[in-house]
Length: 276
Image 1 (cartoon, rainbow, N blue to C red):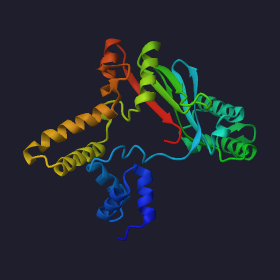
Image 2 (image 1 turned 120 degrees about the vertical axis):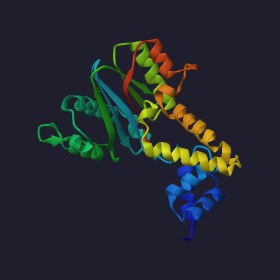
Image 3 (image 1 turned 30 degrees about the horizontal axis):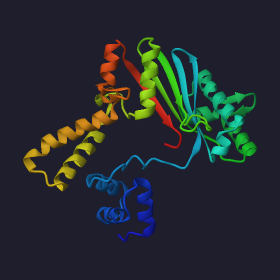
Protein backbone atom coordinates (compact mmCIF):
# COMPACT_ATOMS: atom_id res chain seq x y z
CA UNK A 1 0.00 0.00 0.00
CA UNK A 2 1.37 3.43 -0.96
CA UNK A 3 1.86 5.77 2.00
CA UNK A 4 0.80 9.35 1.32
CA UNK A 5 2.13 12.55 2.87
CA UNK A 6 -1.26 13.10 4.51
CA UNK A 7 -1.03 9.65 6.14
CA UNK A 8 2.37 10.51 7.57
CA UNK A 9 1.12 13.88 8.79
CA UNK A 10 -1.86 12.28 10.51
CA UNK A 11 0.33 9.72 12.30
CA UNK A 12 2.75 12.46 13.40
CA UNK A 13 -0.15 14.44 14.85
CA UNK A 14 -1.42 11.36 16.68
CA UNK A 15 1.92 10.29 18.13
CA UNK A 16 4.44 13.12 18.02
CA UNK A 17 7.00 10.79 16.38
CA UNK A 18 9.39 11.90 13.63
CA UNK A 19 8.35 12.08 9.99
CA UNK A 20 10.62 9.29 8.75
CA UNK A 21 9.73 7.05 11.68
CA UNK A 22 6.03 7.55 10.91
CA UNK A 23 6.56 6.84 7.22
CA UNK A 24 8.47 3.65 7.93
CA UNK A 25 5.90 2.47 10.50
CA UNK A 26 3.06 3.00 8.03
CA UNK A 27 4.94 1.12 5.31
CA UNK A 28 5.66 -1.80 7.64
CA UNK A 29 2.05 -1.92 8.86
CA UNK A 30 0.56 -1.72 5.37
CA UNK A 31 -1.20 1.51 6.26
CA UNK A 32 -2.80 0.16 9.46
CA UNK A 33 -2.64 3.12 11.87
CA UNK A 34 -3.16 1.07 15.05
CA UNK A 35 -0.36 -1.29 14.05
CA UNK A 36 1.83 1.68 13.11
CA UNK A 37 1.35 3.18 16.58
CA UNK A 38 2.32 -0.16 18.10
CA UNK A 39 5.45 -0.36 15.92
CA UNK A 40 6.48 3.13 17.04
CA UNK A 41 6.07 2.10 20.68
CA UNK A 42 8.18 -1.00 20.11
CA UNK A 43 10.95 1.17 18.68
CA UNK A 44 10.83 3.41 21.74
CA UNK A 45 9.07 6.55 20.49
CA UNK A 46 8.15 8.77 23.43
CA UNK A 47 4.58 9.78 24.36
CA UNK A 48 3.05 7.53 21.69
CA UNK A 49 -0.51 6.73 22.70
CA UNK A 50 -0.75 9.72 25.02
CA UNK A 51 -1.27 12.15 22.17
CA UNK A 52 -3.42 9.74 20.22
CA UNK A 53 -6.64 10.70 22.06
CA UNK A 54 -6.17 14.47 21.94
CA UNK A 55 -8.67 16.67 20.25
CA UNK A 56 -8.90 20.38 19.62
CA UNK A 57 -11.98 20.76 21.85
CA UNK A 58 -12.28 23.57 24.35
CA UNK A 59 -14.69 23.67 27.24
CA UNK A 60 -14.67 22.82 30.92
CA UNK A 61 -15.15 20.11 33.50
CA UNK A 62 -17.97 20.77 35.97
CA UNK A 63 -18.93 18.98 39.17
CA UNK A 64 -21.96 18.76 41.39
CA UNK A 65 -22.11 17.30 44.88
CA UNK A 66 -25.71 16.50 45.72
CA UNK A 67 -24.61 15.00 49.05
CA UNK A 68 -21.47 13.55 50.62
CA UNK A 69 -22.37 10.23 48.97
CA UNK A 70 -23.52 11.53 45.59
CA UNK A 71 -21.32 13.34 43.08
CA UNK A 72 -21.43 14.16 39.37
CA UNK A 73 -18.59 14.95 36.97
CA UNK A 74 -19.39 16.36 33.52
CA UNK A 75 -17.47 17.68 30.51
CA UNK A 76 -19.12 20.40 28.42
CA UNK A 77 -17.32 21.19 25.16
CA UNK A 78 -17.25 24.27 22.96
CA UNK A 79 -15.10 25.52 20.09
CA UNK A 80 -13.10 28.35 21.71
CA UNK A 81 -11.82 29.34 25.12
CA UNK A 82 -13.57 32.68 24.60
CA UNK A 83 -16.94 30.94 25.04
CA UNK A 84 -15.59 28.67 27.79
CA UNK A 85 -14.85 31.77 29.88
CA UNK A 86 -18.38 33.16 29.69
CA UNK A 87 -20.80 33.03 32.59
CA UNK A 88 -23.50 31.60 30.33
CA UNK A 89 -21.41 28.60 29.33
CA UNK A 90 -20.21 27.93 32.87
CA UNK A 91 -23.74 28.31 34.22
CA UNK A 92 -25.04 25.86 31.63
CA UNK A 93 -22.45 23.27 32.71
CA UNK A 94 -23.33 23.70 36.38
CA UNK A 95 -27.06 23.44 35.68
CA UNK A 96 -26.74 20.28 33.60
CA UNK A 97 -24.46 18.63 36.19
CA UNK A 98 -27.09 19.32 38.86
CA UNK A 99 -29.78 17.99 36.52
CA UNK A 100 -27.87 14.72 36.13
CA UNK A 101 -27.90 14.28 39.91
CA UNK A 102 -31.68 14.75 39.97
CA UNK A 103 -32.71 12.73 36.91
CA UNK A 104 -30.08 9.98 37.12
CA UNK A 105 -29.83 9.24 33.36
CA UNK A 106 -28.27 5.92 32.38
CA UNK A 107 -26.20 7.34 29.53
CA UNK A 108 -25.66 10.37 27.32
CA UNK A 109 -28.53 9.56 24.96
CA UNK A 110 -30.95 9.34 27.87
CA UNK A 111 -29.66 12.61 29.29
CA UNK A 112 -30.08 14.44 25.98
CA UNK A 113 -33.63 13.13 25.61
CA UNK A 114 -34.65 14.04 29.19
CA UNK A 115 -37.06 16.92 29.72
CA UNK A 116 -35.06 19.72 31.31
CA UNK A 117 -38.06 21.97 31.81
CA UNK A 118 -41.61 22.00 30.49
CA UNK A 119 -41.50 21.25 26.77
CA UNK A 120 -37.68 21.46 26.47
CA UNK A 121 -35.23 18.56 26.42
CA UNK A 122 -31.57 18.79 27.30
CA UNK A 123 -30.76 18.39 23.60
CA UNK A 124 -32.96 21.42 22.81
CA UNK A 125 -31.32 23.32 25.65
CA UNK A 126 -27.94 22.72 23.98
CA UNK A 127 -29.34 23.71 20.58
CA UNK A 128 -30.49 26.99 22.09
CA UNK A 129 -27.02 27.53 23.60
CA UNK A 130 -25.47 26.81 20.20
CA UNK A 131 -27.60 29.54 18.66
CA UNK A 132 -27.07 32.05 21.47
CA UNK A 133 -23.31 31.56 21.85
CA UNK A 134 -22.58 31.06 18.17
CA UNK A 135 -20.60 27.87 18.68
CA UNK A 136 -21.16 24.14 18.78
CA UNK A 137 -21.90 23.26 22.42
CA UNK A 138 -22.05 19.60 23.40
CA UNK A 139 -21.91 17.36 26.45
CA UNK A 140 -19.02 15.01 25.78
CA UNK A 141 -19.48 12.75 28.81
CA UNK A 142 -20.60 12.51 32.41
CA UNK A 143 -20.40 10.12 35.32
CA UNK A 144 -21.95 10.00 38.72
CA UNK A 145 -21.36 8.05 41.92
CA UNK A 146 -23.83 7.30 44.66
CA UNK A 147 -22.85 5.63 47.94
CA UNK A 148 -19.73 5.72 50.09
CA UNK A 149 -17.98 9.04 50.56
CA UNK A 150 -17.60 11.13 47.40
CA UNK A 151 -15.12 13.95 46.85
CA UNK A 152 -14.60 16.02 43.69
CA UNK A 153 -11.56 18.11 42.80
CA UNK A 154 -11.42 20.58 39.89
CA UNK A 155 -8.17 21.99 38.54
CA UNK A 156 -7.46 25.03 36.38
CA UNK A 157 -4.40 24.92 34.14
CA UNK A 158 -4.96 28.61 33.38
CA UNK A 159 -6.39 30.92 36.07
CA UNK A 160 -8.19 32.90 33.37
CA UNK A 161 -10.10 29.81 32.21
CA UNK A 162 -12.59 27.48 33.91
CA UNK A 163 -11.44 24.08 35.25
CA UNK A 164 -10.03 21.82 32.55
CA UNK A 165 -9.44 18.74 34.73
CA UNK A 166 -11.78 17.09 37.19
CA UNK A 167 -11.28 14.09 39.46
CA UNK A 168 -13.99 12.27 41.38
CA UNK A 169 -13.11 9.71 44.04
CA UNK A 170 -15.37 7.42 46.06
CA UNK A 171 -14.07 6.09 49.39
CA UNK A 172 -15.64 3.38 51.52
CA UNK A 173 -15.78 5.73 54.53
CA UNK A 174 -15.62 9.44 55.33
CA UNK A 175 -12.12 10.92 55.30
CA UNK A 176 -11.98 14.33 53.66
CA UNK A 177 -8.20 14.75 53.86
CA UNK A 178 -7.48 11.41 52.20
CA UNK A 179 -10.19 11.95 49.59
CA UNK A 180 -8.77 15.38 48.72
CA UNK A 181 -5.19 14.08 48.47
CA UNK A 182 -6.20 11.11 46.32
CA UNK A 183 -8.40 13.25 44.05
CA UNK A 184 -5.56 15.74 43.53
CA UNK A 185 -3.20 12.84 42.78
CA UNK A 186 -5.65 11.45 40.21
CA UNK A 187 -5.92 14.86 38.55
CA UNK A 188 -2.12 15.14 38.33
CA UNK A 189 -1.10 11.56 37.47
CA UNK A 190 -4.02 10.36 35.32
CA UNK A 191 -4.32 6.68 36.30
CA UNK A 192 -6.33 4.56 33.90
CA UNK A 193 -7.36 1.78 36.29
CA UNK A 194 -7.93 1.35 40.01
CA UNK A 195 -5.82 -1.80 40.45
CA UNK A 196 -4.00 -4.33 38.26
CA UNK A 197 -6.92 -6.78 38.42
CA UNK A 198 -9.04 -4.17 36.62
CA UNK A 199 -6.80 -4.03 33.54
CA UNK A 200 -8.47 -5.94 30.68
CA UNK A 201 -6.67 -9.11 29.62
CA UNK A 202 -6.23 -7.88 26.05
CA UNK A 203 -4.51 -4.72 27.31
CA UNK A 204 -2.09 -6.77 29.44
CA UNK A 205 -1.42 -9.08 26.49
CA UNK A 206 -0.69 -6.12 24.22
CA UNK A 207 1.71 -4.61 26.77
CA UNK A 208 3.50 -7.95 27.14
CA UNK A 209 3.78 -8.33 23.36
CA UNK A 210 5.12 -4.81 22.93
CA UNK A 211 7.59 -5.32 25.79
CA UNK A 212 8.88 -8.56 24.23
CA UNK A 213 9.21 -7.15 20.73
CA UNK A 214 10.90 -4.02 22.05
CA UNK A 215 13.39 -6.14 24.01
CA UNK A 216 14.15 -8.16 20.86
CA UNK A 217 14.61 -4.90 18.95
CA UNK A 218 17.08 -3.82 21.65
CA UNK A 219 19.07 -7.03 21.17
CA UNK A 220 18.29 -8.59 24.54
CA UNK A 221 19.12 -12.34 24.83
CA UNK A 222 16.20 -14.74 24.39
CA UNK A 223 16.76 -16.29 27.83
CA UNK A 224 16.23 -12.92 29.47
CA UNK A 225 12.98 -12.07 27.68
CA UNK A 226 10.50 -13.53 30.24
CA UNK A 227 12.00 -11.52 33.11
CA UNK A 228 12.22 -8.38 30.99
CA UNK A 229 8.60 -8.71 29.91
CA UNK A 230 7.49 -9.34 33.50
CA UNK A 231 9.36 -6.26 34.69
CA UNK A 232 7.95 -4.02 31.98
CA UNK A 233 4.39 -5.18 32.58
CA UNK A 234 4.87 -4.41 36.29
CA UNK A 235 6.14 -0.96 35.29
CA UNK A 236 2.99 -0.53 33.22
CA UNK A 237 0.88 -1.32 36.30
CA UNK A 238 2.85 1.21 38.36
CA UNK A 239 2.20 3.84 35.73
CA UNK A 240 -1.44 3.04 35.00
CA UNK A 241 -3.06 1.69 38.18
CA UNK A 242 -3.99 4.13 40.93
CA UNK A 243 -3.08 1.98 43.95
CA UNK A 244 0.30 1.08 42.40
CA UNK A 245 1.29 4.63 41.52
CA UNK A 246 3.82 6.49 43.66
CA UNK A 247 1.96 9.15 45.61
CA UNK A 248 2.61 12.52 44.02
CA UNK A 249 3.22 14.12 47.46
CA UNK A 250 5.55 11.39 48.71
CA UNK A 251 7.05 9.16 46.04
CA UNK A 252 8.47 6.82 48.68
CA UNK A 253 5.02 5.31 49.15
CA UNK A 254 2.30 4.16 46.79
CA UNK A 255 -1.28 5.39 46.87
CA UNK A 256 -2.20 1.89 48.05
CA UNK A 257 0.14 2.20 51.02
CA UNK A 258 -1.20 5.68 51.81
CA UNK A 259 -4.76 4.34 51.80
CA UNK A 260 -3.80 1.40 54.02
CA UNK A 261 -2.15 3.76 56.52
CA UNK A 262 -5.43 5.62 56.83
CA UNK A 263 -7.69 2.59 56.87
CA UNK A 264 -9.72 3.56 53.81
CA UNK A 265 -10.34 2.04 50.41
CA UNK A 266 -11.04 3.61 47.02
CA UNK A 267 -14.19 2.08 45.59
CA UNK A 268 -14.20 3.99 42.32
CA UNK A 269 -12.69 7.03 40.63
CA UNK A 270 -13.07 9.06 37.46
CA UNK A 271 -10.89 11.66 35.77
CA UNK A 272 -11.93 14.00 32.95
CA UNK A 273 -9.68 16.37 31.06
CA UNK A 274 -11.13 18.69 28.45
CA UNK A 275 -10.56 17.27 24.97
CA UNK A 276 -9.15 13.93 26.13
